[in-house]
Figure 1 (cartoon, helix red, strand yellow):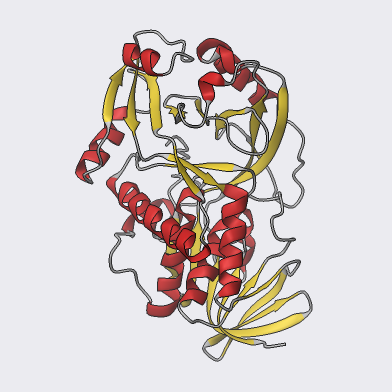
Figure 2 (spheres, one colour):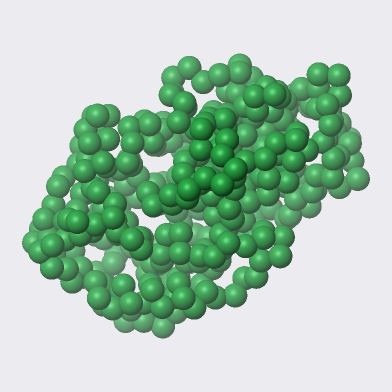
Amino acid sequence: MNREYDVVVLGLGALGSGAAYWLAKRNCRVLGLEQFEFGHARGSSHDWSRIIRLSYFTPAYVRLAKAAYATWTSLEEDLGERLVFKTGGLDIGPRDGAIPLANYANSMRACGVAFEELDAAEIRKRWPVWQIGDEIHGLFQADSGIVAADRATEALRRAATLFGATLRENAPVSALRDAGGELEVEAAGERYRAGKLVVAAGAWTPQILAHFGMRIPFEVTKEQVIYFNSSDLSGFALRSFPIWIWMDDPSFYGFPVFGENDSVKITQDTGGKAVDPNTRGFEEDREITARVTGFIERYLPSALGPIGRLKTCLYALTPDRDFILDRLPEHPNVSIAVGGGHAFKFASVIGRILSDFALQGDVAELDLSAFKIDRPILRKTDPPKTYML
């Protein structure tokens, strides 16, 4: 067994698998280590679908989203399969809601992204399932859609292996240490050495950073998605109904029918409670279910039906909910990605960014200054939390 690598990647969910793919594609000797089995449901990367969109609240995210579409296309071309499905996307909410749509409109304008501003009458006309009053408005962006989540993460790992990466499951890290300018990693009874390390450990990021004497303010919450077996699915068909996000507090989001059964996926964003990722349960959060059901009864009543599937996941949250995409200041051969519960759509480009950090130390074409690990809020002991996007 080879124990000498150029780069070791810790964590093989979507972000770590993306890093392994891009590193291997660039002829790097890469080892990926996953503490659980591949495709496990303990973290953030599982289930059938994730939203992808160009509509974001700052230009930095819009530019990153543009790059994500291109890097997902690269993976699709490498494997000859489709992973991204464009449905169009609707940002919708009250005109006086907690999340101003103007920020999204201005960011898209700044980045040259075409979109439409819709009043309630136009929303009702296009998608009659919405039962909304005239106080509601929205933005529609045609390129938004769905990334097939489980399939996409598996595709990233498969492509990484095809390009020569070594990927190991059930290999939790027990030790990390400096070894004369390189890094030594102990995992599942084996010891590996590499010049560079990539940390994509999601909810387990604090445990990895502790090996380097680092601490950042960090919270892990248990979230859930709910699939409703609606008696009338025609209004939510994949080719005619968009992904959508309700821009208010609380915030909700949903999908057209997509996946392995005929149902409508709707849930609340950041509605869950703080948990320890090592001891958290997988049971239903009835408070989230009640809030989601109440929202559907008011605004999307035809989606309501028996719950056919309920899945839990973890959000790894920085206090401002912005990403961390950086190298460790005291350990520049260690790079890190934290996704804040909204990174899956960016997994392809974040993987490329992490490979840039490892191979060339910087990313020339993207401004990542908002995602530094030493930004002011991450230096505070008890910073305020702002999870609304």
